[in-house]
Amino acid sequence: MIRVRDLHYRYSDSGPILRGLDFTQAAGESVALLGANGSGKTTFALHLNGILQCQQGEIEVCGIRLQPETLEEVRRKVGFVFQSAENQLFLPTVLEDAMFGLLNQGVPAAQARSLALAILETMHLAEYADRNPFHLSAGEKRRAALAGVLLMEPELLILDEPTTFLDPHGIRELAVMLNRQPISKLIVTHDARFALQTTTRAVFFDKGRILAEGPTPEIIDRFDWL
Ligand SMILES: Nc1ncnc2c1ncn2[C@@H]1O[C@H](COP(=O)(O)OP(=O)(O)OP(=O)(O)O)[C@@H](O)[C@H]1O
Ligand SMILES: [Mg+2]
Image (cartoon, rainbow, N blue to C red; front, side):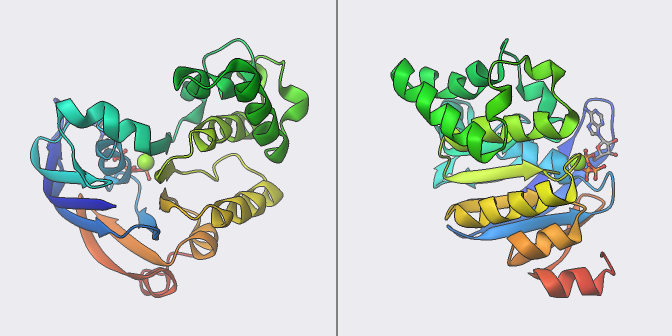
């Protein structure tokens, strides 16, 4: 599902941020990315749908080598919920936002509407369908962004800090919902409990390198990350 070889990256005004990353994820696998603030998790994740361009190294996602010509194809297969998920909402209502991707894919409006309403229902956002997404609470915005991404039925789901702003019940429900999706998931999180509930393998980032990887409970235990 993901194959990354010797990935290096630096921002225009930074020193080296990713320093020779190798990473593989099998189809159907759920992997947690753990590590300190600033260790490069988001920078790495943003490479996987080409938001950041590979400067050195190689990336293959869903069997496709990532390069400018394949970007669109890869993005159709990869669902991404950003660390600042509110930036993903941009239409006047929650419902329109949820429908946007489906309409873009050519799904007829009536069908897109009923699919979007159904997912808003499962995200406990049905009553907000006609509200302005900018007026939602932080946790509601995150659930709205997730709804839009899940509707696209991606082959790979990348979630950057999905539990931020969610209350304990919201976190638990998100874990249950993710576990029901039989697709590959890459979950960047500081929430070790959530990682334990949703992933089998964890990768521990340190200063732009992968310091260790293994079964999620072992990695959490080894780095005292709970
Ligand atoms: N746009 C940018 N320009 C310059 N430097 C950046 C930029 N984005 C991130 N960085 C730097 O890159 C490093 C890695 O950041 P990144 O966001 O990937 O870390 P992270 O592991 O996701 O951290 P967190 O747990 O806080 O989300 C940090 O030192 C950060 O300051
Ligand atoms: Mg981050």
